[in-house]
Amino acid sequence: MKKAIISILLIMSSISIFAQTRTIGLFLNDTSKVYKGYTLFAPKQYHTTYLINNEGRVVHQWSKSTYPPGQSVYLLPNGHILRSCMTPGRLSSGGGEGGRIEEYDWDDNLVWELDFSTDTYMQHHDIHILPNGNIIMLVIEKKTLAECVAAGFNSANFQLDPKTQQLPAIVLPDYVAEIKPTYPKGGTVVWEWHTWDHLIQDFDATKLNSGTPKLHPELVDCDGDGKKLPAFWNHMNSIDYNEQFDQIAMSVRGNSEVWIIDHSTTTAEAKSHAGGKRGKGGDLLYRWGNPICYGAGTASDQRFFQQHDVEWVKPGYPGAGNMTCFDNGLGRGGSNIYSTVDEFTPAVDANGNYAVTVGSKFLPATYSWFYQGSTQYPMYSENISGAERLPNGNTIMCSGTIGEFREVTSAGEVVWKYVCPVQQNGVITQGVAPDVDAARVGETMNSVFRVYKYPLDYAAFSGKTMTAGDFIEKYNTFVSGINTSDFNVFPNPFSNKISILDASGNENYELINSIGQSVWNGKQIENQDFSTVSAGIYFLKVKSENTIQTTRLIKR
Image (tube, rainbow, N blue to C red; front, side, top):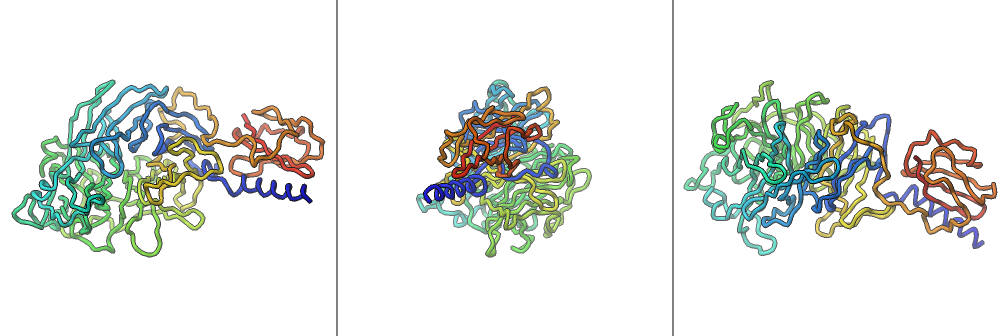
């Protein structure tokens, strides 16, 4: 009876290991539909950046930085990574802190660094490298409450400081800075655009920027969409560049909009309302997502809900020229709480000119495509997160607050799913749930700001060794605390044959892959040819009369 009970417990434990308790790493990889490429990500609470293949195995990693990301990281065509860093800056936006940019070569050598943080400004969230090698980045700048009142803000519209329950002492509007790097350290600001230069308000005619917002959609209403304004007012979280039009797009979470501006201006023109290819200086060329912000719509017209990562679909990709974003869904309303990935087609001609009718909403009226999670694959992240269109028409998404990546076809089918196995204190063991982030509701410590997937033939990989290594997550060599002294499995790693020492000949064997799928089941394992089995981590379950023993194997 005792042996029978032990056997049942071991069976239940084994089922749990392979079917129920997988918490991190690869969950799904439909090889017939997933895009063939390598995925780059930087765990938000950790200092290492990883490049993995579709099996979730590490192809390369960079670990020399001593900073967690702040927030984005990119793989450049020359094989370097460009990485923003979270630093203990003197300004705090309350989210998305940065202040430093680092560039590492393929061999993890620091080749360039820039610190961009003082008590009056700080780089944050996102950066983007231009074709000429310059870098554009999001920056906050400090304005006092008195400066805001003088600019026409209604101080009663600001949220109270959560600590003091008083009006904020400072407000942090956004600007864009373009940096020409000086190697190996530093750089020169060669261009700027400031939100502060393009305000309008109808609160106080005696103050600066007085006018009628609904007649000037090219300007930014100090009142936003009528909700209370946080100190981190615009809360931009992504920046992208359109080389064809020489334009910049910023995701403005504070307005639930995307703004597009002209990069062909000089810095002086960018401060004004004239100049550049479009003749509008630094005024907004286009905006979309929440027409309430310029007096041309109602709540029913709002399409973005505190979104992240608005970016153009690359030339040659399905939907080229459209824009995609991860729409977090905060404040969407209704009983269901969910995020979406949205795609829309801006109303722009071949020369980069946008259709604008004063008093009317910027077109289109709605999305050209969107994805919403399902019961099987729900999707909600209150903040961070991103989405990128891939060359085959799939879209890779990062539900950032829980560190989940998924790849979805145009029909909405999930064909790849992976959960970041790294948190603040390092790599997580399979079967262990990521820690909850006590400082952020709904967020876990394996959170990831954004991911990007690169084609197998991307220039960065030319001449590089792209041999897949092990999985990032840890696996216990022997699971469930089972006594494995009765069997000796060799060789390990194996290539085509598996041998068992001291076996009786009556055992039944099952080879299980890292996502719990049975690869082979039978007796006489020594006679089985495993040469066609894919490389990776496997678990061999050995069943005898009264025991079940499990050990980890590596297939080369």
